[in-house]
Amino acid sequence: MQSVRRPAAATAELSALARLGLTPAGAVWITLLVLIALVAVPVALGNQPYFLNVLTNTSALAFISLGVWVTFSIGRINIAQGAFAMIGGYTTAILSTRYGLSFWLCLPLSALIAAGVGALIGWPILRLRGVYFAMITLSLTEAVRLAFLNGGEFTQGATGIVNIPRPAGIDSPLAFYLFAVVLLLLGLLAVWRLSTSRIGWVFRSLRLNEELASSIGIDIARYRVLAFAFSCGLGGLGGAFFAAFLQNIYPASYSVIDSVNFMLYCFLGGLDFVLGPVVGAFVLVIGFEILHGLQQYQSLMYGVLMIGVILWLPNGILSLRLRTRAAAGSDAEVAASSDAAPGPTAR
Amino acid sequence: MEQVLINGVVLSVNYALVALGITLIFGILGILNFAHGQMFMIGGFMVYYVYAVFGWPYLVALATAAVVVGLIGVAFELLFFRRVLRIAKREENSMLLAVGTALLLENIALFAFGEKQRGVPPLIGGVYRIGNAFLPAGRLLVLVLSIVLIVALLLFVQYTKPGRAMRALAQDREATLLMGVNVDRISALGFGIGAMLAGLAGGLLITISAVNAGIGTVTSIKAFIMIMIGGAGVVAGAILGAIVLGFAEAIGYALIPGSTTYLLIFVGLILFLIIRPQGIMGKPWG
Image (cartoon, rainbow over all chains, first blue to last red; front, side, top):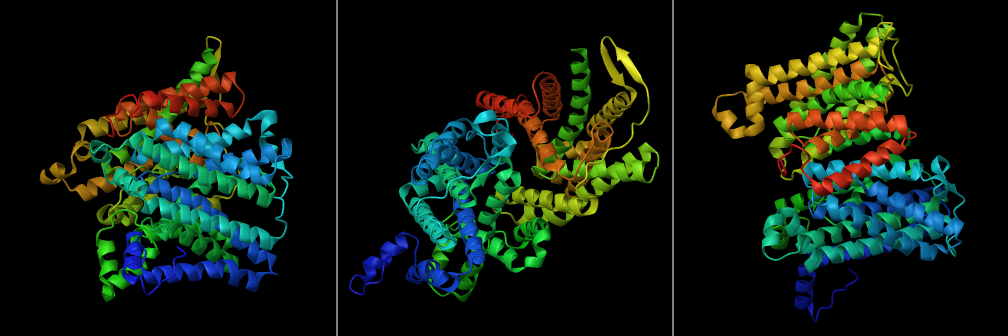
C-alpha cells in the first residue's frame, strides 16, 4: 500500500505488487488517495464542521460495510451487520457510562465482543447458504434490536443510553474526521491484506464451491466462522465509533434498513473489489448530501438506484474502470485479472 | 386457553396465505421475494381505501387488493427479475434486486399512503362463544375466507394446466421447456399469483389489526421465519411453518409481555436451525 517504486528492484517490486493484485498505477492512486484523505481534506475543510462530520459519518459507514464485503467474499449475504454495529455501540456505551472505562479500551473490547457474539451465532447459522443465510441474518438484525429493547435496566430499553463520553484527546470535528479516516484506512489495509493472503484465497474457494474446498482438506466450518467473526468485529468497531461520535445509542439506531444499506454500499461499489464498499458508501452518502433537496426522497432513490444498478451495472461502479481499460486493451495484466477474477480480487 | 387457541388458528391461517405466496414464487423462480411484506401492506391499504374510504363492499375491496398487488408482481417479473435472472453471474443479484424492490414499494407506499396507522370498521357484528373463548364474527369470516383461498390455491396448483406447469417448473426448468410449456408466461403468472396471495392476506388481516406503511419488513421477516421452519419451496412446509408461527405468536402474546415474544421466537429459530437447517419438510439446500 505504501510501497514506492524503486527503479533498481523494479521487476521484483512489480511482481510483488502484481501478486498483491496491485499495479504500479494502482499504488500511485492509493498513495494519492491517502494524501487527499489525511492532508488535503483537513486543510480545505478544517473549519467547516458540517462537511467534516458528513465525511466522518461516511468513513465510519464505509468501515462497517467492509465487514459485509468480507462475508460476501465467502459467498454469504450478510444482512446482520446493523446488529453487530449495535452490539459494539452498546458495549462502548455501557462500559464507558456505567464503569467509566476509557474509550480507547472500549473500542477494542467492542470489536472483540461483537466478533465473539458473531462467532457464537455464526457457527450454527453459517451452515445455511444463499437465501437461507440472508433470511436468518435479516431476522438477526431484528432479534438484536428486540434484545436491546427488552434489556431492562442493563440497556435502558427504548430510552437508550445518552451522554456517552467523547474519547480522550478527540474533541473537535477535525479530530473525529482524522480518527474515522485512519480507522477506515487501517480497516481497508487489513481487509486488503486478508483478501490477498492465503486466507483470502480460501475464502474465495468457499464462495465458489464449499464441497470442493472441503475435499482438498480446508476446514470450511472454521474458515467461514473466521470470516464472519472478522466481519462482525469490524461492525462492532464501527458501532463503537458511532456511539462515541454521536454520544448516544438507541435500539432504533440500527434497523433492518441500515443492514440493507451496508450491503448496498458493497454492491454499488462492486463486490469484486476491496475498495467497493468504500466507493459505494462515499458515492451514495456524499451524492445525496450534494443533492440536498432530495433528502426526503433518499430512501426512495436508494430503492430505484439499487434496482437500476443491478439491472445495468451488475458488477458495481468499479467494474466500469475495468471495462474501459479492457476495451482499450491497455495492459495485459488488467485483462488477465478481469478474466481470472470471478471472485473478489483485491485492487 | 381456548381463546389463545382460537387466536392461534386465525393467525395461522392468515399467515399460511403469506407463506404460500412466498413459497410459490421461491419454488417457481428461485427468487426470495423480499417485497412480500410490502405487497401484504399494499393489499391492506387497498382494502382500506376501497372499503373504508370509498365505502364499497368488502369483497370488491378484497378483489381490488388481489388484482393490484398481483399486477405489481407480474410487472416486477416482466421488468426486473426476468432480465436479472438472464444476465446474473452471481446468485446474489436476484436477491439484491428483491431487496431493492422491497425498498421501492415501501417508499412509494410512504408517499402514497402516509405514515398513519389505518384500520377498517368490523365487517359484521356479533360474537360467537366457544367454551370460555370468544370468536368475533368478523374474525370467523376472515378465517373462512382464508381457508377458502388456501383450498382454491391448492386445487389450482394441483389440478389445472397452469398449476401443473408451475409444479413442473419448480422441479426442472429445462424439462418443462422441452414439454412445450411457455415458461416465460408461467413465471410471470406464478409471480403474480404469489404476490396476489400477499395482497389478499393483507386485505384480510387489516380487518383484524390495522396496517401502516412500515409493517412490510416485519411481515417479510415473519414470512421468512415460516419458510425457514417449514422448509423453503415446499407447500406443506409453508402451511406447517405458518401453524407453528401463528400458535407461537398467539401463545407468546398471551403469556409474555410485548416484543419479548419475537425475541424468544428468534432464539428458538436459531436453535431449531442448528438441528435442522433445511426446515421441517425441506430438502437440504432445496
